[in-house]
Length: 434
Image (cartoon, rainbow, N blue to C red):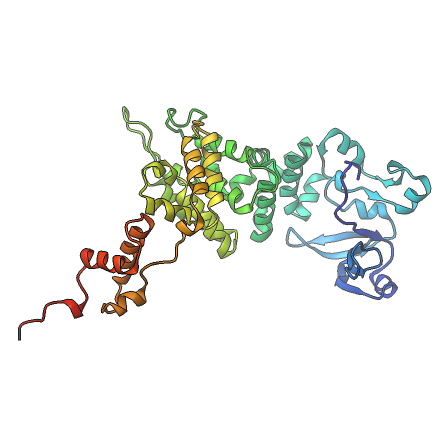
């Protein structure tokens, strides 16, 4: 509200203990009563009839001890908002809004309960830990990543002692679940300030801890005729810089990982130019290990790995046979492949001619030409006298290629092509001598 943005929801903090909150409303759920958290469901204020508004209500508390670097093992309920605020992460997240004061004064600023200087830091663009930074991060290691994300998203700076604590405690990020780390990185990549986020991750040592494979992109030189921008790290940062807010997570991760195989495949033997032979194949293997480590879903893995695997194919798109081109266009979410190629080009030599060609051809081709109903199927082969075998795949591919290229127009033409390309079916073969 202080930033002039509409809140997505409201969380309530109160001196009332969970049992009191549970008894006050007809529909409640004690999702974390041991920590003082109750969900209250109510449809009276909803703009949509019958749709409930779910509000998280938490009792004022102070956390007594943390054992796993993430969750408190014990809490003590408090009667004051001040004590509740002092356990929170950053000053800009430690302010409260008193609706009663707001109703009485009709002034937003006067209705803010600010015990930690949050309004000043919000105005000055500073991410500052509440109290002693080491203690805040020791309590919850995920806060280190949140500091980076907030600083990038709002284009704020991280206060010096807060950043120093992150540097010193970076190795402790391994205590946080891989799923939570993955989700924070995905938010950094998709909130519109990915380059800034990864520069901060690199500067604080968190990148080396979470994604050492990306840290290795530093100082990996590239051929200047194709990459005048510099090394692989700079190239990747330029891609991240161009990711808009709201970009799909798979495209964002594809942009981050597309050249992850280059450090392992770098070669330079003057006077030959720098080469990265096999970097796509190696990159797919490295990316797969990263995605599994961070526990991405199978569906997300498939798409991200496809982006890494196919990002170099655009270099041959002008020379592709019509059948190959149409098969290329069939890749799931082809628009993401096209978008990644555009980001790749704009972050290097800047020649968009292949992108323009691919975009134009994809728009020109009707969907029924890219994915036509097949003229020849396995049933057609069996009906023609062929016995099912592993070679069916190759035979059907011959017919489909010809169909995609417009060389056949009927099932009979397709079967004749297969006969010419392959052995005739047993029923047509000459009888063996007795």
